[in-house]
Image 1 (cartoon, one colour):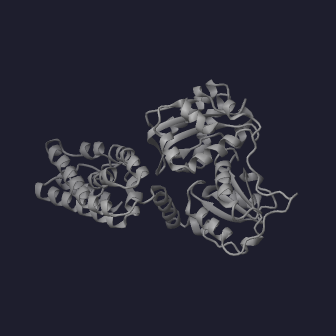
Image 2: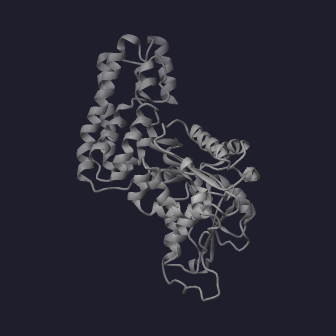
Image 3: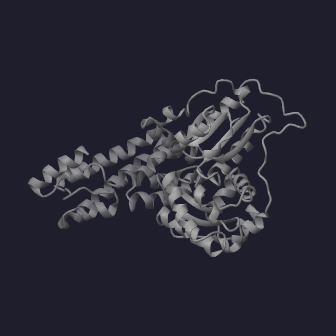
Length: 432
């Protein structure tokens, strides 16, 4: 942006520019993440910090620490002061970079430093991290435990709103007559995984207050005509409107932890509620169990303690294992990558469920699910997935297992254990 243009001009005159050092220094964010790692009262936040440090410091994705700042807004002081101290140090020592350091990783930052000044550049990073850590630590120590997932969802919502997506999609629109809403449909591209988990979790959440409400999932192109509210991701809104023009659209970032879902739940359950559906009428259906979960997920389909790479590599690994186990044809793996390009299969809460497109359903040989565990997390956009479930389903045979996964999500301790355990049998016991 502007800094790069100014830096180019200055570097052309002097051979380097301190302007290049204003933004990419990973030190301030490192200090914040280290403080959360050591002093956060929330176990999930504490456990997630090391992975975030790797992504931030080595990967240069600074957005990874934004949710941590949102959990305690006062923490924003720490990286600001840390960066000011580093810039002051660089100014008095005459440091600068010869080009833009992008992404803002320590590797890129140092590689753009003139050789003789590399030690000073590193010292500036240490100063920024140290100052940021010292300021952030007491703030985090004195604050109550905060939920990282909520902060991540808030970050996603704020980004969407800044782009005009939330308002345009109608995610914040009020339900006109909550009592008249009888069917809520969660829709994704294939109707195979993302929407199934989202519908199951929302159904379990709402059924005590709204036993009359039917919550189902389907492909975005097959939303039923009696749908009152359609829950879809932003990129699928136009397709959903064509499929169900009568339905109110609720747009979300992910299907498991999204502020729009919280708002929808509040609107559907507030005020006077209808009585439970009389005998003979159909209430919200539970996911069917036509195939044993023990056949759908087996020990050979679970890979633990995997080394994180890119999300494309994680999806490729899951697809190749499903192909090896005889669940799908080789072409299904490419369809999984295409599906991810369309809209992310990251669900929230550290879970991703990559699967094929609608067109690839014909390449599924038998229903099966595989699991790859990444304790440090694999970046899925701005989020991290610790558990990557590869899914191939014929009909509704896999929905019972997805419902079981949703049950696990309700128990934070079990979910966190699943992200780090070395016991394959324990995972199978939880999911079958």
